[in-house]
Length: 610
Image 1 (tube, rainbow, N blue to C red):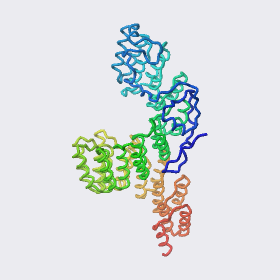
Image 2: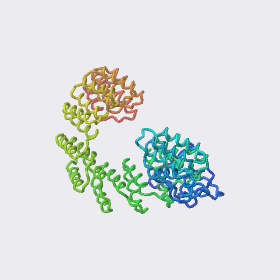
Image 3: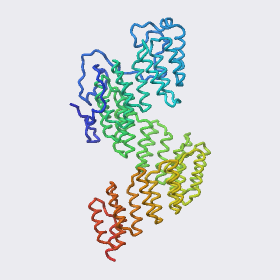
Image 4: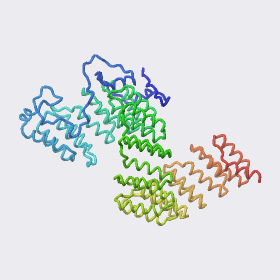
């Protein structure tokens, strides 16, 4: 029987215990979990798993970190080698093996940073030739090879080395070897293979710990397999005798937040608070949940959690404050955002570039360019260098106010200060030049963009295409679409809608319909805007029956017409004198739950009383 987690004071959602347990089946281990771990109460409260107390073995509550080049005991330090019983001290071991092995091991230890695949293979075979009895230098080589980011894919070499290890007499992979392999598989998107390594580790009789399991949790969460990750933390790890750590719970909370299950993340967070001890949430855990609440616009819960941090004696950091300031700016509550900024400063946290960017971006969206510019000056005065995000926000604000020349000056200023414009910078400028009717300048800017190696994205192309359509240059807009299809980026539904709208307004309704069919054939589903644009074009040409057929097709494809769609067709029916059909359509619109707007009623009433 699974115990339900108590609900948080912020919600009445179903308990976290409802998360499926059936996803990831692990081989069970009969070892008892550590009785001293304060996290034990948490996972026992989350799942009523019976544990055998007959075993005397204990799991360390502070497992060693994932091995890298410097995480292993030095083979030159003297004393017996960990993991091997009754082995001689290192110095005697080196005497027995000779100076060559000592030199090779010392070379690996002292030069164990990222290395090339070829160098790793050379050192590996050198060690094998010396018939070593310690796994540590091999682990260091594997760790160094895994951390080598220059290799395109060290997969064949790493698995070849691991295979050789398993076939070498007297050498046995240990938990650190498996941890390296699991971490590597997760990093290279080979999650199934990572689980296979965990299974092998357990079959070898090696105790799994958080070092080996936490990377798997990260891998599952990154793949949105959150139910499986929850099942591992709440059910499988206790069964394996492995106490979930603060990091384990934090990974799960982050995964829940990333998958939109924020309230479940809150419930787990409150359970962690309740049990305290080693699994008590830290500032990172709290900030993760605060951040996602702010991004969702749930400021009430975000600020409750912020206050609870003080109650729990967890001091908010710059990340916490930046998230809350973002949430306030998103809501347009700039006065409160400034108050919080002062609180943050009084707490000893200096605003960073992210803090200023958040405030500047919010102000620019509200057309408060003067205040945003003042913040920019304050930022520079305090020794912070504006980045491309800062300039992009200000450029957007200036363009939105129609101050194109000032936006151009800002772009030149940005370049002169060593900030390279990115795709957002160029797209913002191109979009507003097009809106201002300066198509030639927009095209020139796009050529400049390409010439410096900055590839336009789908938004850039669509912005230029929209400008061309509005100028009536449909053929050039079509050429741009063909260029996108041929060389990329892939057009999206907005791109097609832009050209369909241009064709419809020019009266080329047949070509617009052909483009929609072409769009469908390429895997892009038409949306409400696509259908409404075509219905409007057909009504203007007097082809009411076809427009009505398109409405039915739209509904059959799962697109629910909105009030604009209905108003467009009602207006077309009225102009055709088909008032009864117009009234029927109005009733159909209301029966589908669409509220008719003033324009719809006015249109129908005007024709009824003519």
